[in-house]
Image (tube, rainbow, N blue to C red; front, side, top):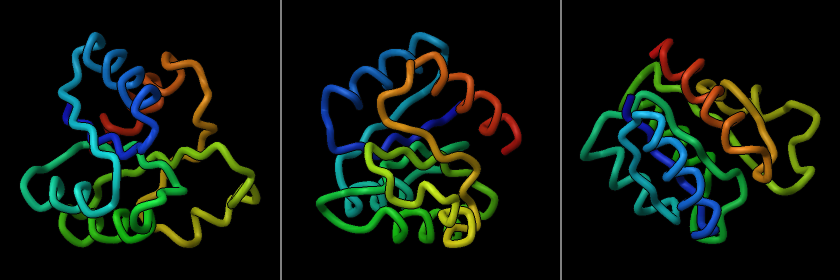
Length: 120
């Protein structure tokens, strides 16, 4: 499965990348919206793990671009804030499939990636 991780916390991104790679997935990692959109313009992904709060660019712009460029690609939003904790992210992003805290166990993220990515 082809996975794109968009997370500016390098340690967290490396943890997720390592875990998903060991689980057999091909993983690309980007730290900001611009490089994520560039990756999406060059390659097709089965699923995107996207930090909702990026200091460089808009996560919603990345999700929107992904939906236009690759219809049907699913996005797992992650965050370390309570922003959108009411579930409104699902009304704002047509391709949102999950909303998780960034500090979840990596095996939980892997299970979500496998579940939602397989549907793609």
